[in-house]
Amino acid sequence: MASEPSTQSRVMFQAADKTEEPAHRKLGKLTVKYNRKDLQRRLDIEEWIDGQLHLLFDCEEEEIPELEIDIDELLELSDEGQRSRLQELLQECGKPKEDFINGLLYRIKGLRKMSGPLKK
Image 1 (cartoon, rainbow, N blue to C red):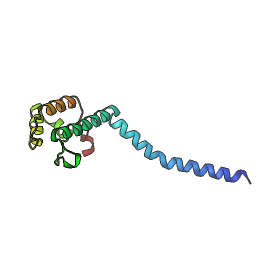
Image 2 (cartoon, one colour):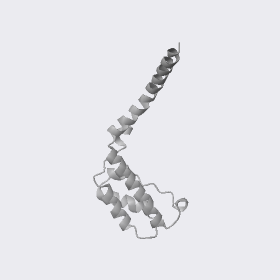
Image 3 (cartoon, rainbow, N blue to C red):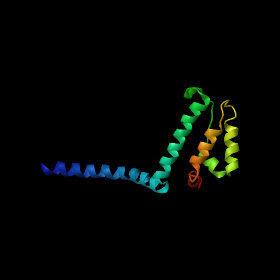
Image 4 (cartoon, helix red, strand yellow):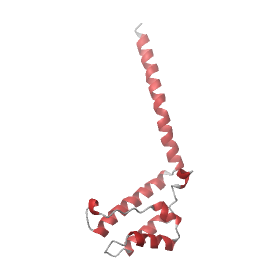
């Protein structure tokens, strides 16, 4: 009789593992669908943008004007379209913006759009 509870515990333990596996599999599909290196590069660019906006607006995070730079939107535009869109978004900034714009355009070169598959 002593062996019966341990057998039942194992069965219950294995059942708990099986219920968690689909969540891990979904994560696996995400990293297959979106290359981990691309995701890290995009994250690095977004962190760079955040830091540069602090410098451009010379203020704390709460004081930065509502500004959304959509990388996927920029990737849909031509080079000149990207530049003019960024100038439009940054028109409230009094500091020179050219270094930021050039730096961002350089960083997004070769980056792939990610929102396409999500729209299907």
